Image (tube, rainbow, N blue to C red; front, side, top):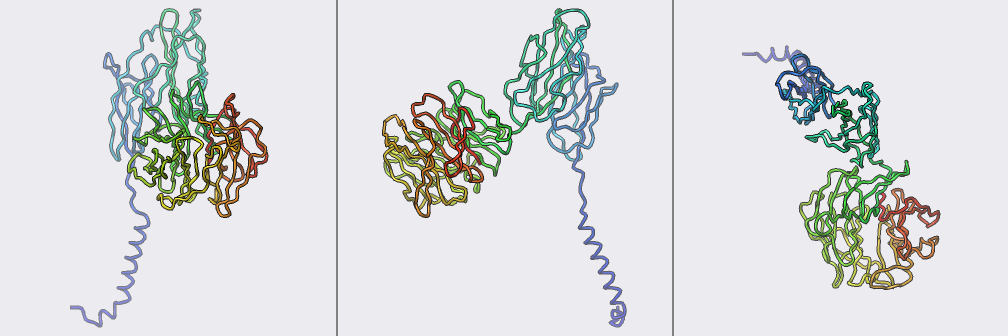
Length: 505
C-alpha cells in the first residue's frame, strides 16, 4: 500500500513524468506515419511469333514516369510509380509498337507481358530515319492542327520513298493511320483535342515494298486560354463552337461535326461549357470540357419552345445546375443529367424562349413568347420560379436577348425599334438598351450602329467595362460579325469576322 506522505513526496516527479509523456505524444501526432503510396510495374517483352525474349525494347508510360530498356532476358522494371492508371508503350526498331493499359495499386506490383510483332519487310529495308522530327519528342503547347515533319534516306539505292503516318492517343488500343503512301516528308494533321497528349510514328517504304518504322514520338496540344470568349460560327452549313483567344487574337475550334452546335455558355466553377446540339433527334443540352473533350448529354427532353433558337438555358454555378426551357415549362437539372425539377410555368399562351441566371444566383430573367415571334416579353422571377413580374411588356418589334450586368443592378436587352412585325421574324433596326432595375430607366447604346444592320445578343465583359455583341445586315446578305464596345456604346470595334452568340465570362 502507498502511503499518502509518499504521494506528496513524489508528486513533483509524477507530474514531470506525465508532462514528458504528453509532450512526446504531441510530437508524435505532429509527424504521422505516411504509408508508401507507390507501386511497381514489371514484366517481359517477347517476340509474338517465336516467343523469344526481346532486348533493347524501349518502355515508356503515359503519364510519364521513367524510360527503361529491356535487357537480354527481355525483362523491364519501373519502380516507385504513383498509384493510378497508366498506358505502357513498348517500341523496338523493325517491330510494331504496342500500347497496353495497367493499373498500379499501392505497395503492389503490376505484371505486364508484352508481345511485339515484327513489321512486314522491316528487316530488308535500307531506309534510315534522321533525328529531324518535328514536333520533337515531348513538345508542349502544339497547335491542334500540327504539321508533322521528318527526314529519311534510302541508303543510296535511288528508290523513291513513300510514307504512312500513324497518330494515336495514349489510351488508344491501336495506332490510327492518318496518311498512306504519301511522298512528302510532312503532313498536316486534322484538328485534334486541346490540351491532350498524342503519339505519332512514320513508316517509310522503298520501291520494293520494304518498310522501316521511325521511333514513336509524343507531343501535347495547347489548351484554351483563360482570356477567351466562346461563340458559334457557321461552317459548311453547320454551326460549330469556337473560342477566341484575346491575347493571340486567334480562333480556336472546339467542335468538328455535322451537327448544329449552338449557344456555348462557360461555367468557370467546373470549367465546362454547356451548349445545345441536334446530335440526337431534337435539340438537347450537352456539356464538355473547356478544351472540347469529354462531351456528355444532359437532357432527355428537348430544349424547345416557340421560335426557340436553342439558347433557352443558363448555368447556375452556385448550385452546379442548369436551368432550361421545355415549351411552357422551366426546369432545373444537375449538370450530370440527374434530378430534373420543374421550377416555373410560363403565362397563358406563352412559352419560355431565353433564360439568364443573375450573378448572385437569386433571380432569373426569361423571355416569354407567343405563337408570333414579335409577341415577346421579358420577365423577372425568383430563382425558385416564384414572384414572376413583367419587366418589359410586348412592344412593337421583337424584344429579346436579356443579360445581366456584373453587379446585377441592370440588364441589357435588344429591341427592334423599327416596329417591324413580320411572320418570318425579320428585324430591321435592332438596338441594344440597358435597363436600370432600380429606376427602370432605359439607355440606348447602339447610337453608332451602321444603318441597315441589327445589334443582337449583347453581354458585358468580365469587368463590366465593355459589351460584346453580334452585328449583322438586316437582309442576311452577309454573315454576322462579333463586336465589342465600351459600356456607354462608344468605341465599337470588330473582333471576329463571321460569328454569333458570344459568351464572355
